[in-house]
Length: 412
Image 1: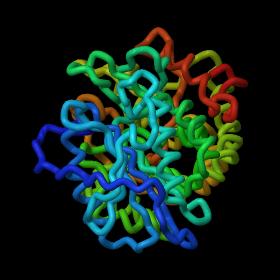
Image 2: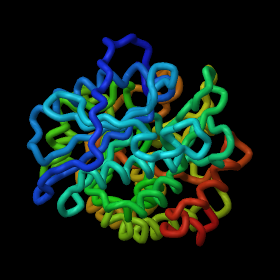
Image 3: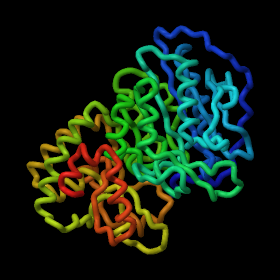
């Protein structure tokens, strides 16, 4: 099983047409707009074409006033980044970054560059305006949850948008921290939804950080397969009303044979969930004293060590509900679960999921049941002498969740 990697040579996609319109004439009364932001200048490069083909197929079922847009940043040796609309199965109105007047901060046109992301989104929503703020954003690429790094430094596994830059070797990798993304999106039109076609988006830390940027967040707390979402099936759902998020979750889950935990969260409930989380954390801290929580047997969605060894201290992104259910009094857990259920408006569990690590060694230390798996993760402070926890224990303090959920008050 493979997560977030690609090793098959796809059928070549034709170059997008270069017809460029400075303004798009369209009726915006019922218009809806969704942008798929593809950060593929990495080892996912070869997975781009198959997803573009799926998007082309899905676009055939869209209405005239429903705009499916795509930004593609792939291996710089193959082509320059481009933006286009996919309409009736055809890539049209394609423009380059220079056409859009976008200049990257270091001249390398990284998808992880805030100047590039902000410029692309602003251009997309200005030229394809939507009614009632029906804008959707799909984050396509590598993701590492809330994990952080100073963006001016090389970062091996942080946030979203891993980009090799214009080097022929992956020696200058840059990511975008989720705190930066949240700040960037707050200055742009409010989104109907953010969908993460990337690993580890659905952690409480990310969900809280992004709560003011969109109405719904859809994705997985775990690693996802390299081929990602079934766009030929879900593109029409991205423009639908009602419980569109449930359709996306269900179709994505079915397309991978049920082997991927998924969730959709209503962000208006994240403030209440943060407040509700304070009580179980206080109870757990009172029980533990100065000890660290024993996480044996608790579902985790990421193992940060790639060696052949299994070291529990490298587990991270623990299932939030499994942790609280295990360590908090049952009545306190039950009260918290009510708040979680209001926030998580759709979910599908999985007993196994695609991973680029050996499952039998890295993820066989827990059992999955519907009762244990809640499809959102959270960080739990652990002994700083083990693994990378000294860094994680400090980095978590930069997330808004840290104060909102009362982690600062209990010294976590």
